[in-house]
Structures are given as C-alpha cells and as structure tokens.
Amino acid sequence: MRIGDTESFATWNETFRWLKGRGLGGVMFLISDDHAGLVEAAAQYFQGASWQRCQVHLMRNILGQCAHRHRAEVAAAAKLVLQATDMTEAKRRLAEFVERFAKTAPKSVTCLEDGFEDAMAVMALPEKYRKRLRSTNMQERLNEEVRRRERVIRIFPNDESALRLIGALLAEKNEVWLERKYLDMDEFNDWVASLNMPDDSGNLITMNG
Image (cartoon, rainbow, N blue to C red):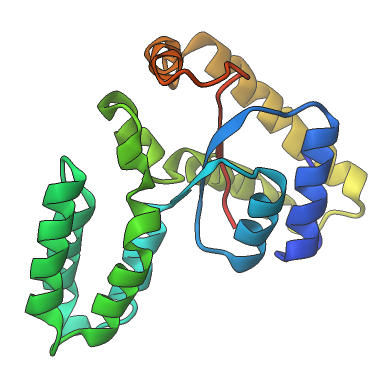
C-alpha cells in the first residue's frame, strides 16, 4: 500500500512504477473508473492489457446527465445494454437506447455511446468471470471499510500512523481472502492457454480513482 496526496496522473504514475518495481507483471485486465490520470498512467505501465471501464461508475455518469424525472427509465434501459449476454445483443440494445432517449436525455445517450466499448471489454472474458469483473465493487467495499476506520481517527498526525491503521485492516482482509476464493482462476488459466498466450501470472487489477 502507498499513500498519495492527490488523485492525479503523477500519483498513479508513481504508484504503478512502484508496483512494477516490486515485480508485478503479466497484467492482462484492468478495471477502474474513467479517472483521466489513472487511465493515462495505466496505459503507460500496462501496455497490451485490456481496460474495463467500471460499469457502476459509468451508470452514475449516465444518470448525472439527465433530468431527475427520466432517471429511472434511463437507468433501466442502460442496465439492459450493459448486462447483455453478448456484444451483438448489447449493440442492438444500445441502438434502441439511442433512439429512445435521443430527445429526452441526449447527454445520457452521448455518455453511454462514448463509454460503451470500454465498458463492454469484459465481454471478451469467459462468462463465468464477467459479473465480478464488470465493476470495481470489490474495491469499493474495501474502501468503505478503510473510510469507516479512518473517520474515527479523523486526522492522522503523519503518514506512519495512517499506514499502521490501514495496514492492519488490509492484513486482516488479506487473511479473509486467503480462506475464501473471490475468483477461481483455474478456468481462466485454461482459457488463456487455449488462446496460446504466454502464461505470465494473468493478473487482474481493480483500481478506484
């Protein structure tokens, strides 16, 4: 873990440089929101990896671009697009979304069209892994636990005190994750082998900006 002063390209750039310096390699799939600095730094350090735009964050962006009275309708239709079973069906539903909301929610239409390809990168993975890798929900839940503890302290006197508290929480979570598999990677590794791709750990990374 590292502490950064700001959400910026410089912070993420240094974080990814540090991770690679520690030996991280073979990254194939990254999941994050559309934070510009994060995405730019990830593209620099993980060339060739697929980037999945978090669908939950995209949905928030879509709903933030339409009038409140249309949000429920737009949300239901956008959800159908993002949860399609294959790309052919997703594109068909996208076309219906565009036609349906072109006048009532044009900015939402543009937002979904612009983010569609990146938000559907997960469709290239085996179906078994799509539900959990279409968003940063796992990372968000962990962040909520960190924030819950951090709000009790309110102000840390220095970085070391923050590292001690957050580090203890992450060590505890690590023990839980060692006992319970979040993702069984056996099928994924078989899929990678079937593509004749080099086996270099097949790392999946979730990030939250």
